[in-house]
Image (cartoon, rainbow, N blue to C red; front, side):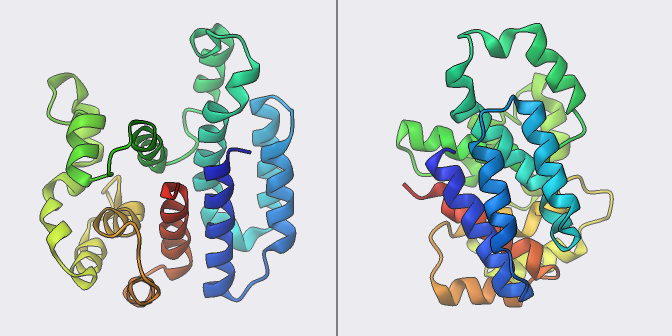
Length: 223
């Protein structure tokens, strides 16, 4: 498993355990075995799904962990495959088969990986304009998905309470509603103190999910 993925998995599950008061050690071992295995990607997906099927209280994290599995594939598994594997018909078939899996968190993780590779500090404006290219005409699908994030960039200068208020009032139709609070808070403060994390949790509507995603991003972003 990629080091940063391992950090993210452990931090996310540890935070879930802390907030939900539900033990995750067995699940953590199962997931580590899945990520570390030499199986092909779709077999890993099946094994991950089996692990989540056995732990229904963790269901909210299933698709987020699919994102992590995907990033781990790009970081580690692909090294064992042919150089042009990601242009192969086999990978095209996998992309088609998993088109409805995962979340928009995948883009955030890929952006953070790029920031680490290029040694630059992650920022919301940079993510939107330089990574997602939301200002470009040919990337209007991204603009639509991230429209609420784009419209609320001013929140980077606002307290967490204000981010929470906006998150709660987003319409159910918003494609980024579920991730808005943890992602916006991460871009505002990607190295939170214990007190800042407590304030984040206190203002969350879904503290188990939100704090797990927030912890995942903070841990993934660490060197």
